[in-house]
Image (cartoon, rainbow, N blue to C red):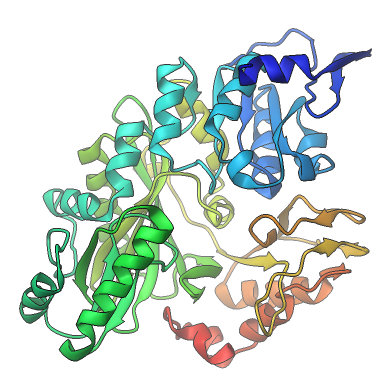
Length: 481
């Protein structure tokens, strides 16, 4: 039996005022009042705080939403907030949130005509975007061609070079064997870094200081890349010593209009995973912002990118910047850009997908004040081990300039099956110093009982003298581990 027929056949219809509800393993409901929509319904193909964020933006745009959920997420907040909801499978993400067949069947069942993938899961899946395109479903994001192009780091670096965007010296091709790696290393010099062509998150990435250790690192990187991404291709790049990770937010419509919304500093990382972000960057002045923004816009125009996206750079101690990669989706850290520019990025993303033109020009963009985001994870702050479980106490901080994006509530059980991110604490203030003080106060107010979180680590960072002074780089957190 086809998935669509299974979804329809497993339902038990119950009616109520203003909606229809189906119980059982799969359920779906929607409000029936007449409204004017850019889309008939938007299927939110994600979970947690980003699903709630998308649903809220859609509500303000008068767009109807349908949430998807795995069996373990039945009581999740995004299910409660959406106009409708449908179960797409078991807790295991490969059988639910990563199951393209289940998601497409859900779209057909609920009669949606657009899908918002959020971030993570299938947000950067060219295969999912392509299936949507071939099925007449609007994928709220860039085209499958662009996702595939920028999802391969080798192809992405080549596109950056063609667009005149600075890159670090690199192998300019995937490396076939250890012998070729040694030959390239002599041209590039040490230290160097071996990177997987596909994927990210530090997998398939090895730092090499000497030729003696190159061979073993090369084979290890290939094995990791193959295991994690199903693709063993790797390349070599000159290692940038103690750089900052600075990214540029771009917005591009389907009519050729492209702008950037300034930068985000993302150097506070653990194992290549961002923990704290801020905007603007302490190291970026107007001149550097202009150069990096123009470089990002050139790349976006060159590849025909549409939607919101992020061009990521490494910045060295002399303020030279180098293209690293492009994320073809909404970012976890998008709220800090919203706070300093006043632009709702999720709404812009939906409007662009509906064919609307950008309402702003580059000259209209103004960055005001300073914003910081702390990612609150359900994990032990000392060992970083995940800490799933039932939330027995919750107090969310507030006050001027404080924003909390979350999907947790008192009594909610944090599942063990997904990423440990449970909330994003975001503050905005006139100056960076004031933003740090506000964030410290908000972190100290934040109470989450029943599970462990990394809030103590965030407080420690906010009180660190080097962080306060802006003396940070991607190795900053190593001394906190």
